[in-house]
Image (cartoon, rainbow, N blue to C red; front, side):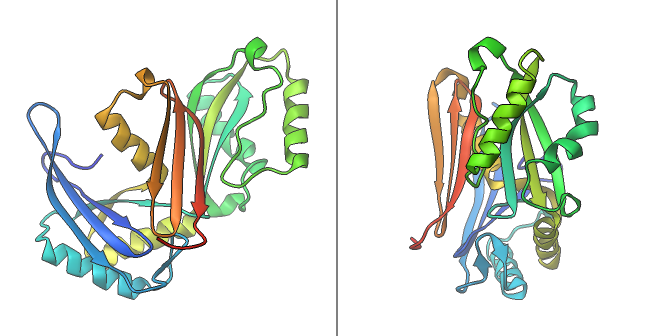
Length: 251
């Protein structure tokens, strides 16, 4: 994800108070070596709840950081977070990845709090559900807590499909505006966006590079930033629940 042998990628983390830059080199044994790391502070309110409010100042800071660290590669990977990101574990009838891809917009409309036309959608199939063991089990909460009415509707939906084979999928929706502003920022800094990921997935991928989560029982990963706290929980390597929380008092 971070690099290729021909064109190494530069990982750019744009936080509430600073920009961090990392570049890795792959070693012969498949491990990675940190070859570049740098940090550049940002003025207050340049980034608010994950959204870029002062793009010119942020772009200038990123350019200065790239120059200071003598970065040669032009290919960058970054991640987005905050209220513009929606992740939810949903239940759908068992189907192939191709079938779900064709129906994901229809499925997503009943869950996401954004206009379906304004988001980029993706999903990952997690696996089939044992109907006997999971009868009556509620869907996991999304970034925002569901209301009692939402939970009742989910329960009614599950009851009506008691005998139908079901599976779980991770639904992801990101407002296109946020993706576009992150892409524009990288371009303004003379970088070529290669990957725009989610911070929660970047955290998960980093953990999986260092340990086999499937052998560790229940695991919680926590990213504590200046204004945002992101957490993910796994059980035997399977995604359980996650949340992003705005800290009332910055760190």
